[in-house]
Length: 63
Image (cartoon, rainbow, N blue to C red):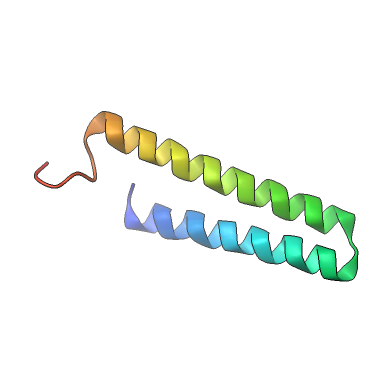
C-alpha cells in the first residue's frame, strides 16, 4: 500500500469517527450512520490494500 493511500484511508477513518461523534453529541442519527459507514469503508479499503500487498509481495523488505 502506498504511503499516500494509507494516509488517505487513515484520514478518512478519523473523519468518520469525528462525524459519528459529532452526530452523537448533536443527537443527529444521520451523521452517526454516515460516520459509521465511512469508518467501515475506510477499514475495508485498508484490509483490501493489505491483502493486495501480501499477494503481490509489495511492502515486504527485500522485494
